[in-house]
Image (cartoon, rainbow, N blue to C red; front, top):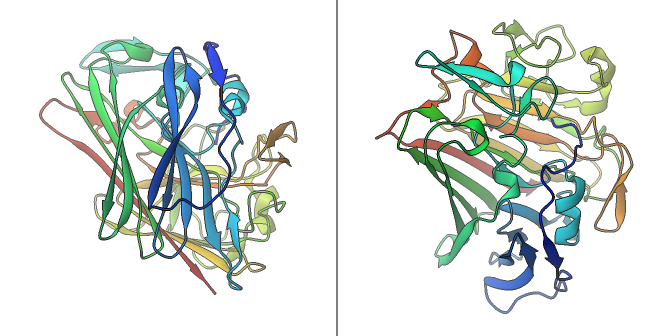
Length: 372
């Protein structure tokens, strides 16, 4: 979804090389990963009983690695990212992060709430993107871990002060990642506020089921549980929804991602659109199924949000090098479950992302990994 831009204000950093890939002796281990603005950054390694392994750090609550076996039992890291903290601080396009306070775009970088207009950073000119110049992907979260019967888990917390990036209200946010013994990555996000505000937390991993360095994802087969999408003008939804039937946006049956890339008629060829997930928007239901025919890896996604942003890495330009490879266009994709982008500025949608004191924002995603 994002343009690849500088990561806002330049923090003072000291970087420690990533630890080696040796398998930890317990389900959870941790190591120092560097410093940001005087705050220590910790890298955690979680391993389930089947050998799935995930690395995640306190900066941005970012998943840096996720190793999953293919149909022959060979494991590969299936998320795009960098081998050290410095890579994320330079020009990361939100690789693996928890994004907030509001993920996706707000048209014109402004909104009204109870008659008062709020002006936000236009960091995706002329629009506001992913929480602003220093959103939640660029802060150090507190973290605690647990080893449960279902598998290892880590919970991050962050307090966003009133006025941060132009938003009203002090918000306490949580993001919990569990690597279950059913070979699931379960992401649970919650938030509360002391003043009416906007919340749309988004998880932003870039997926490549062939392995992060295996090349384009254009041969991946995607199915979306979505009969409609919300077209933009040109990219930010205006409030309209259109049927996908008979268009490039029809993924109601398995389809290679590369088949209709040029049919989107976008300014940058590829998908970067919000789809309306069928079913009740506040209940866990099927969102997507993604398959890499070569490796046999399959990821199914369930969630409880009204929409999902399908993004094909259009702005990856071959200048970003991570984990020993160069990430060119279409080498990773995002499936970001969410409230509809710009919903605060669309009367019919405006209540979607408003959070009031005494209420709790909740967002659950279940990524299930199998082979076919």
